[in-house]
Figure (cartoon, chains in turn purple, brown):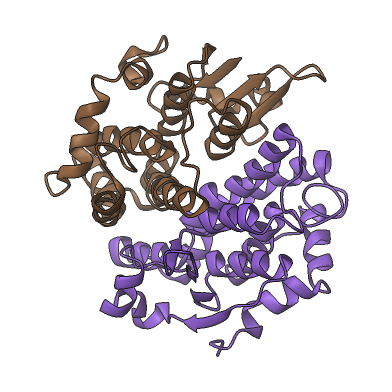
Length: 214
Length: 214
């Protein structure tokens, strides 16, 4: 497998965590979002949307390119079910997926690199304004997530082992720190972040440990 | 089942389409996002995130509240597998989920009601600016989706029957029109929208046909 990603992309980061948790090996091709490499003809041929991550996989038909991290993570769970990243019970699965979507739909899309760029272009926003914009979505999202983890978590977001929800949470905490968002109101989320710092799958997925990091 | 939603919410709209495609019956409780009803104590007790939709379901343990439309739709597919809204092959499933996430993560979160409100508050944006902001995300997203539908579609986004991807697309087209985004560059998406106008599950889910529409 070849993962086309970018070291600091939250969506690529969450995909690396899931691949590592599944114990899969993969090559990495860095796509430098700062220089617009995601809009090159070569990358657009792989992913017409021009976003990372994109995962090249082998199939009986000769290969396929999977895009969109939520779709890649669900594919991973179906194609490589052990260890599971979703619980067995359908309602529990819905709870884990809701935590993942809370981050993947209601936080991350509003404060990734292309949105910061758009705020600068459209409204002349500076870094302090962009940081404030990020906090506007991270703080209420994390407040709701902290409550959900209080109900469902036991060391990780749901139960006592990492799930898809943790694949989303850890990159979002990394991003929150880059935007200088205060996190002390979320002790359970911070405890999960602390656990991830010594978990090999999470450590290996950290942005600083990627071949394209600078 | 009770669906807590709002007639014009894209996330509630896509959930209604999926429930209808599955042939399920449900009561609806309107949550008026314009008056802040989603932040009432009663609704926060159901969904601490204060967003629609929330789906109350019966379980062996007495009931559960499911939140986040991507999680609700996956639960629907697992709990009520017929008719399927995902194909059988894992790679095909990933393609459908990628189209859904393209809309659910890269378009819709950037131009829903709360983001428009935030742009007005933070940057003094007027309706024309908000419309332009919506177009900034809808146009490139739809351009990529049009290419994916060209590859995978046969009357609907993927193949010849509605899938999860169509549950996301039709509400996003409805929203694009409200933001005055020109859609003539996307003939395949418009053909799907035309098909949905005479499909009973989509017609019954349309915002104008909801009890809380005004």
